[in-house]
Image 1: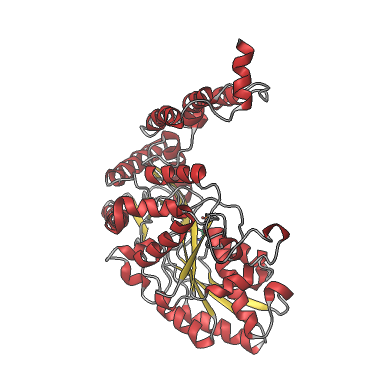
Image 2: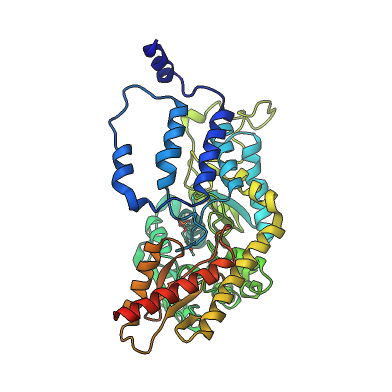
Length: 490
Ligand SMILES: *Cc1c(COP(=O)(O)O)cnc(C)c1O
């Protein structure tokens, strides 16, 4: 009898209805979202020991797996979804995003085919372009995140630049020294993308930034002119719409005009910051966005999607095809019809696999569609406005307090500040220790950044569950810890 029982678990992927399993999992997830558990490193040896068992010869069944997820895995999950978490640029997914992801993995395991999930990629990309006021002729493509989204955009830029000199770089390779001009404040995924695209990291020219973190446009002009004189091919200019350290938005119009003047591809990295265009207060920063040839945005940052969703938009989609198409394949012969379509697998649907670097990939469109459908543009705008206003409120309070110093006026939803004290001779070390103690207290969890050589606390407000109260909570805690450390005499 017992053996029969095991047999069932061995042979079937699951027992019982998904609804029952989901209901059990839902209870555990709600418990997790009450954030009453300790940080996972408090009792690491306990749960590691429980999880580090032998390879199971016999299965325990789906219900038991859910129970273990609820009892051992979830309570020792990540700190990122905590409402007080403001490190880096990342946050927990909203529930609708997580549920839409689950729906896709059940009902459309691949993004291909003529079905609602494939269709929603196009719908949601169009919605997002409209919401973020991208040029109307731009078309989008999903990928796993900002790193790949930048790679895809820069692949189009490479194609554009080399085709102009009569070379197909996708076929023939990069046969001439070339250059990509990027703000010194650009994300380092730009360097990697350029390396992967065969242009070499050395071909990235970092253009210095001013004290507020924006590219110095006059230096850009000089750099391009010099390269052209030296027969180096300009491939792209990369500007930030929300830099990762401070949220700086480059002067898009001025940079875009230079790009157009030289006929050089203009790429805007808005992985984090582009949704800032929804806030009337910060919208003016995005003036000139319409000059871009390509733009990226990460729905898995400010829009609250589960991680694994980035989007690239380009003006000339055919460049993506020429840069990334896979060519013929024996296994596709005879399976794909262009006419007289009668079945969802008669055709691959929107052929994303020929426009980027992924083939098998999850259906991300339904996730973005669900998030926009849930709260609408109004809801997204309200969230972005709240986050930006929280950064400004924090800045205002830091400015007023004699033990706090604002390092940089917030541009979007990042605020860099630090604790100061007349008797402290090493403020970098003091703030490092404050940050360490914040982590150990496990409530308010900003990261840090060097701002003009000074170590700052750097909350970035992007979490849907992060609210106004977290501004005061964070400041109160920083002051309490700072005062205490000064009393102890660091
Ligand atoms: C986060 C970020 C990236 C990288 O995105 P991933 O989704 O982490 O791959 C690129 N550029 C900027 C400006 C970012 O903030």
